[in-house]
Length: 460
Image (tube, rainbow, N blue to C red):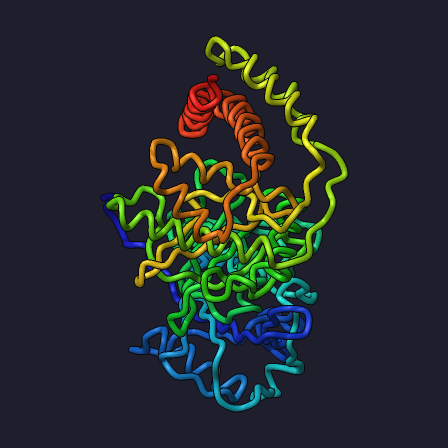
């Protein structure tokens, strides 16, 4: 520690009074007037600490003195801390910005000798002219970071954006909780569910989509998902609006969707992920039977459609190119033979499908009933295509296959049995091509396991 006089800084407090406007969140700003610092510029209600006053007491007092609103300690949230140095040669100071979303009384000008304007402004469209120090705090707040440094140089303008450099340096917090939730997505989610007090990323490692578990101020839980692209967003939204309601309480409910952000908020499912659970034979058979019922309900949730062409076989040569170096002897011949057989099958009817039906996308409720989630691959497809990945769990377990089809309500026809084999082979080759190029050993091994099963089951 260096010797000499300790560095001492004053502390001031800033009030981010926030409400939901027609086009998004808005904050209350006041325009300074008279013989005060930054006269004529917009600023947040703010002030210095009185002697022996803590910062919470100070922001409550300043709110009452400047705007007339009454705030309780319970409604205060620490938002941002800014280490600021003005351009006037004065020493640096710490500004603590508090967010408040609930208060009593309408905001109004209480000190007309120091303020000649007060109004609400969109957080995404702040007015000018504004104090640069205030703008630094609001920029940090909008970015979702906990702190910023705003050290101005002699000659810099007090007003934000007057030809000089932006001196704001944002400081990120630890990569946990809400720190990773982008501001645009937080605004979208809070418009749908209210104030978020915690956001934890729970994204699946192998997908391009990102998912956060959200906790609201009242303790409720939701999930926010930003899709990897418009195709997945459109599919999931369409499924939630049209097909998923047929599953009742066994699937999430869509709360809000944002096409521009390619994001959705859905309700949370209570229970445990089925993926990785150890189950006894009887329990797993009961789950498969219930999954059969859910799959049947999904497949019957909208009228069937006629298929235009056998599109799955059209892609097989491209997938073989990527998988060929990793295939076992006889794999390519098997897949090509099934592709020829697939082309000769009669055109199937298409039904609403989940698109990625496997244990990874199943939640087991406390009563043991399965629940389905993640509908970003949902589309009209063959009923058998929806069984491909789940059928991997049937390998060596004919009891599970029987339980599922019993719950589904009917056996597969001979044509559907062949179609399922063909589509399983196509999915296996696609998985091997993807898994080997994306370092995904689980998907790769599932593909090899499927081809080994098909070799055995299709021998004369």
